[in-house]
Picture 1 (tube, rainbow, N blue to C red):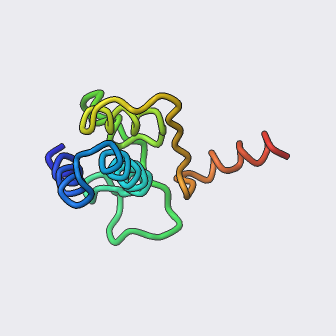
Picture 2: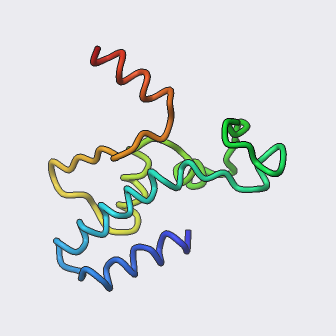
Length: 113
């Protein structure tokens, strides 16, 4: 949690604490969360060294906060950003640049195609 707080503090120091700076920090924070949700801690891996094609084993979080930080749901990332940077503005929408799961990408293709 301290790492997320530091990230937001550094973003606000860099871009400023006005509304523009907060939203710029929020944007980078959410993109960072989209990348972080793919990270697998070494203690959770079944074998070392990791193999690129293997999926991580099922992960059971110890708390709701840990589940939000490890989850792939955009809504959870937005809740985390609200914890760190305050409420999102009205009409806020976030779409990750990259898919964090092949399953989600397949569901999107099926819905569109």
